[in-house]
Length: 389
Ligand code: HMG
Image (tube, rainbow, N blue to C red):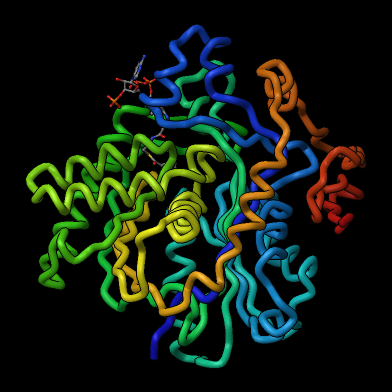
């Protein structure tokens, strides 16, 4: 039985800032951000969006009533959780109107956990072939104003359905994974922004990728020739490019060209959305599928998932005949085109907006947010959500 990604979609909030404007304000050359880091636009979440609403908005764009009835497992991957105990998946279960007899959990391991979700979903489908699993990867990336990590922020979510005989990408059984405790990036419970040892995190990421690629090739007897494209967790697009360049240094020219060309297409959405942590690898997959003119059914795609702390995994998928018919390209293109550009001052103001913490109820202004699902405030310590469109 083939198991894999049956449907996939993403959501980005309607606000963004141009990275060249941010560069000017921060006193650095715009090319450092657009070429050196490889980011053009950075999505900004208004206070009416959180990890729950971003995910619900992503899922809404792909699910039919038939999918909803078949889903009996919701896995929510995030490092922007809204509660220490209650899983964000329970809110999603309610907002999307999923069946009662559904398992719903939240998973955490920095940017890696959506891959843990995908693998758990594969196991679930192997045991329950007629069910479907909804995997959500949703985050708001925050390092802080005027920090080195600021240019690698973003916000958004990817939603995908895992099922038997998938319509888009069949996940192959072999994968290789690795854990190594490291303090490259973390966010203590008391902090709204991440702590990072930037250069160390870059080295850690590259070492994980090279090690896992080698292990995968040893285990499967494959080489770079066997991949039609290689995809990466993309905290910023130059990160994946650095890792890819290292891995193809000694490869034949045609392999280098094929993989570098594929990478160029796979980074397109990431470059205009920013780091969405758990969803970044899967956003890159959507970017490749929706924008490539050369991919074909039967092509093998390698995927490198990395989460600081650190856990990594390398696995592969094979494109299913007719996969193009199940993409949501027009919807995504329109969503990205209709966004509103913020000035750097407006972005800073939103970034510094603090929602009350403590005893008092509050409401959030949702009138300027065109998203279907919004966060409306807190009543008696309970988060409130609504569908407004
Ligand atoms: P930095 O010190 O500001 O940047 O931090 P830099 O000085 O290293 O410059 C970056 C690049 O721009 C360099 O190129 C420069 O040469 C180039 P590279 O050596 O990388 O090829 N540059 C220019 N290029 C063209 N024109 C110019 C110009 N000037 C300079 N004029 C850093 C960069 C990424 C470290 C920082 O932004 C940071 O700390 N980001 C956050 C950490 C991060 O994203 N790490 C990635 C690996 S860890 C990971 O992926 C996990 C994560 O997603 C979290 C999770 O798992 O949850 C982060």
